[in-house]
Length: 623
Image (cartoon, rainbow, N blue to C red):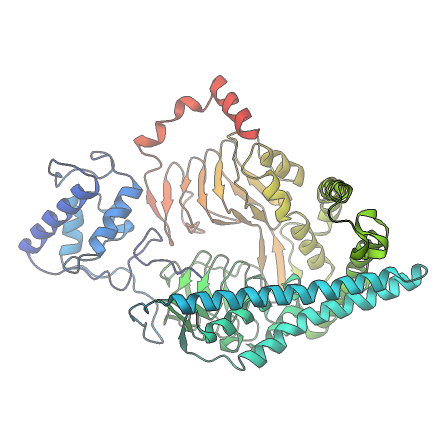
């Protein structure tokens, strides 16, 4: 887990950003110190003018100023400078005046519940490092061998069935046995190797770390993750030791590791891409600590809750936000940002619906039945038939009869892999382009539906089918991604082709409610949040991004985002949900603040944006 810096471009000032107090001499000394550091960063021999604008006059950019902020933070005699300070006070004189004069702190970090450790990094040990790596490799090979052996024997047993009913019965039995085995093994391993997780710390690469790593790998590589968003997933976390109340909805696929340290109160909602791992790596140690959520808590998308964090009953944490070690959100309050701070924005934006325990139980049972009686048996039957009938695998899958040194064996293997690969591509594209379109009419925008029913299952099916990572990896970062997204259902208006309009990590809740204006380019990792959830209900709404925008990496863009045309949205920015619609500006940080839309360096490649040179380079990139 990566902890975001409180002083970087995430915006806001951290708890260490305490203004230096004093008179004119303090401000003057700050001016000299800032000017000297900035000159070194920009490798300038002439003095930095005190009234020179960092961007307009001196030609600096955000990367240069981030380097400057880092240099300042290394000086214990200087106040910490954040990127927000730089943009709000874009000259040496105004920056020194703001940080050197008495001024109230505009926003305080969330109250702390525990002290933050500041230990020095542990000295490394090559022997311990190598031994731990060797044991990890040994576990990997051992686990893989047992899994492949069991799967191979199971396929052979299924393929020897006589008649369709016998084949289906054996497929159900084998699929269920392997499924429950894979689900139960991490639970058993956790209780045998760890017992109950407690708040503690231990060095990396030791035997304790090895046990931690084994449990972490097994918990994450588990088929039950496919049931995220279902009560089945909540039951799985409870079996691992998590204390989770009734009617909790968890949509994040990031599985908590130290589950005994996770407490979630009744009626809480945790949106997708939220991280509540209950551990972190710091200074050569693994630190485990509790994450405690009260009743009716809302945790937004792209959030991080570090160790020793808490949220009171009815509290909300907005999208693209973080609680750092020891921070707590008081009951009933709304917070957002990194570091988090109070806000009046309402993030729980869907009315409740009737959704009782019985409805949840039926939905969970139906999901398990579908997997055990339909999905797994069909998968097992396909592979069992291939195992028994395809010549490259030998007579009834007996590898002893194969001539591994024969060129025919490798030719057959190549042909089989090509047929399977391209068959999957063709059939897969046909399914994702047609099935979701048939299902979309079951879920109308703006209508509030109860969770765990037919509409909810349909919505989840649309999201899964249209977010197959294989296809975004296949078409992403190329000219083909826009055509793929349009076929899925995106409204992209007239596309201005850049050869990489969306990167390779775009995702959404519904492609049919996703609009991106002409000329907009996305770096990577865009998540279009066009569904709203409570613990009992959900609704879908259109998410629209304006024209001629540039979006950085890993942005969660919610429905109702208050940005229009010609905006620059920086990496991991929090898209505002209140205030006027921003146009012709840049937004940086969480919570976001305005910066210039562009600087002089952005026009250096304008001659490549059109004409024959653009077409030539696009063709070369696609090849």
